[in-house]
Amino acid sequence: MRILGIETATRVCAAAITEGGRVSAERIIIEKQVHSEKLIPLIRECLVQSKIGLPGLDGIAVSIGPGSFTGLRIGLSVVKGLAYAAGKPILGVPTLEALAFKSIIDKTASEGDILLPMIDARRDEVYFAAYTVKDGALLESTGGARAGSLLEVCAFLRRWGGARVLLLGDGAEKFRHFLEKEGCGKSIRYVFDEGGALCSAAPVAILGEAKLLRAETEDAASLEPLYVKDFYTLVKTQHIQVTS
Image (cartoon, rainbow, N blue to C red; front, side, top):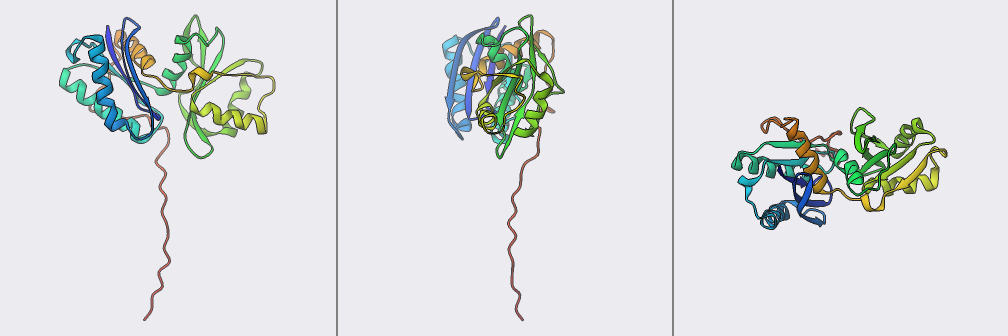
């Protein structure tokens, strides 16, 4: 199966095409606020390198969040347009799951590890989820993605005292600074995957292929990004003096 994968949940703007779980083309730009301008050209380059057109794809996988609200909307809008034009199924892949799966692809995760992918959610918060590695596969260990403070992440991790925890994503560096200042579960063996700091389109495509094989496709009309938390709105109050 040939799957186009798209990743726009963070400052990473990326596209990849996989065939039978192998990457045949991948393009990536790491820069904020370029997704609307650069995503389509990246997709086109991947199609040219793979020597196929949209009709040659079996499905289109997209990272659905959590992450940047704007980036997620751009990615999903592009995918819906391409899928409609080419008559291809859409595969929604949770961003944190794809980030965790990247460590399996890169062979930095070991059997029995706790994988903790984290994405910076601004302020002192991160988006995070936990997974375990069993028989080379990814098993979810929590109720899914959530948003929380670094202190909440620390409390969450205490359930795995003595375990090896592999920290991934751009939120991991934020948590590293927290650990240096506050400490968190001294019996836990923390390992920072320096190579897994960024999201990637390749694991999105590979996980999308697995979903397609299970016939777990999305309804394009109802598919929405997984925001996890609401928008923050800042309202400035103006004091107006009324004179008669």
